[in-house]
Structures are given as structure tokens and as C-alpha cells.
Length: 135
Image 1 (cartoon, rainbow, N blue to C red):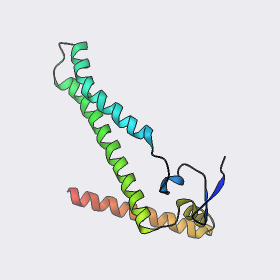
Image 2 (image 1 turned 30 degrees about the horizontal axis):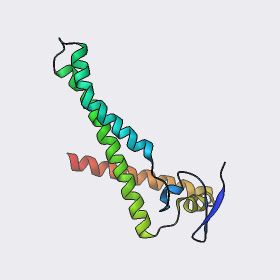
Image 3 (image 1 turned 90 degrees about the horizontal axis):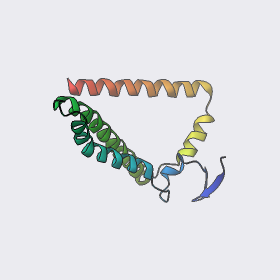
């Protein structure tokens, strides 16, 4: 159920995705718990796999550890990017996310479509830039 509340003379939806951009919002602890569990698995999984099959070579268990390490790195970088986005959002004094969504919904259909096409074009341009940097 969505409710409205007044925040700094503005009305915003009481929604967990909207309230993440407010300074006094609660932290997302399940994400930190997931990173902690993945780190513990990474430390214990190699010993568990070697003890389960003593004839297994070192390459076989390490493949699973590399997949787990990539998940750990992905969640860590994702959390860091989200934190940086929140900090920049607050420092720049941008409007609340709920207000921006309301303004987007008030736009005409052709304006929304143009915004979607512009977003797709910028995403593809960023992807080409990343590929150019890698190659």
C-alpha cells in the first residue's frame, strides 16, 4: 500500500525504492548479509570440495571458486555504485525520485517514447565506448 508523507515541504510516496534517496532512510542490510555469506562460502568451499573428492585436481574446485569470486566482486561493485549514486544525488540537491517519476508520468506519450529512445541511444553509446576502451 502506497502512502504519502511530507518530507522537507514536499510530498513523496512511501515506497522503499523512493525513500532510498532520502538521507534518513534505513540501510539495506540484506545486501551486506549476502556479501558476507558469499565471502564465507568462498573461504570454506575449496576445503569442502577437496574433502568431498580427494582425487579431484585443483582446477576443478577452483572453477566454482572463480564463479563465486565473480559474484562477490559484482555485488561489492554494485553496492559501491549505489552508495556513490546516493551521495551524488544528495550533494547535487536533485529532486526526489518519486517526484521525477510523477513528472515523467505526466508527460505526453510521444515525449515518454522520445525519452526511452534517448536513453537507449545513450546506453548503446556507453557500450560502444566501453568496447573501444577494452579493445
